[in-house]
Amino acid sequence: MNFGFSEEQELLRTEVRKLLDGQCPMPEVRKLGESPQAYSPALWKQLGELGWLGLTLPEAYGGADLEWIDLALLLEETGRSLFPSPLISCTLAAAALLESGSEEQKQARLPALAAGSQIGTVALAEDGGIFGSEGIALRGERQGDDWLLDGVKCFVTDPEAADFFVVAFRTGDGADELALAVVDADAPGVSAQSFPMMDTTKRLGNLSLENVRVPANAILAEPGRARPALDRLFDRGAIAVTAELLGSAQAALDMTVAYAKERIQFGSPIGRFQGVKHPLAEMFVALESSKSLLYYAAWAIDAKPDDVPRAVSRAKAYASDTFIRIGVDGVQLHGTIAFTDEYDLQLYLKRSKWARPMFGDSAYHYERLLRLRGL
Image: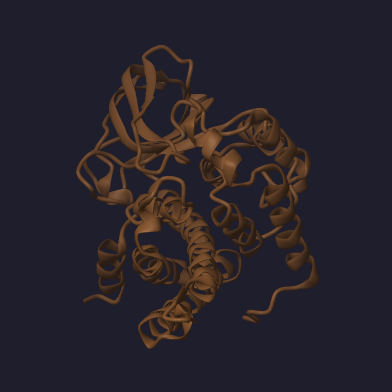
């Protein structure tokens, strides 16, 4: 793979940054974070008009027909600005529909997602802390051609903003007896609730399903054949979160470097002291290494699918620890000011706390790498 980006990709990055800096600067980010829905419907619609909400979708469904490496660049910029939006949620819902849905299901949902007129999210994880297909415990009961779901899904992103959910459930006791289904937010027995978060720019909560009837035409992946699709969806979620967290980490590092150049102590900028410049250099090296792992994993989704699980786990594990370190060290190098609510750096530290466990923390992914190697 050539890690250099094309002129078109650099233009995409530039245009996303220009839009977010102009229309969603940090004061607006703080304002949206305190709002009930945590995103701007007007700006969300504008992203749809620009084609950014359907970046990886085929043109037949209103998308731009680009690849995941292009999406990673966009998500880096949304992470850099802490842009509050359900972008990752919609991206994953669209990925599930694109891979596993029927043509009728795709035509009914994907154009609306690409245009921003509907918001979708995925409901995969459950209480227990086990990620991936092996963590699915919600059991569906067969009712003729339909399925009946009764249970709770946890760690659902943007649950109150979503118009529909892509829900993973179990159809039997076997490891491969799984299914994916689309459940509308306004269906009888469906309720979603967000919980207070340290990072107010993100929404996370539970999806409650009380005897919810799922018709046969809402099933995406056939019961018993959904496990590979579910695992691929999990990997895409990990990559999307990694892209955003590395954009946030870059912004936090940039803020810390700028402060080290401006803060004068003993008649000299503190960036000249070894106790400051050495940690900054180590943070830079760790971040650049994380970016290489991310770009390869995002590229592999379209170009080398067999290597995706290993690439994703390497990228998410290393990036999670890198962002935590940059967040903590950045606050320490700023001193007391970084702990105040008025200063923006603490917002990035809070984002690192959200990103680390999403779709598996570093411990989970390092263990997964060992399992993939048969150890």
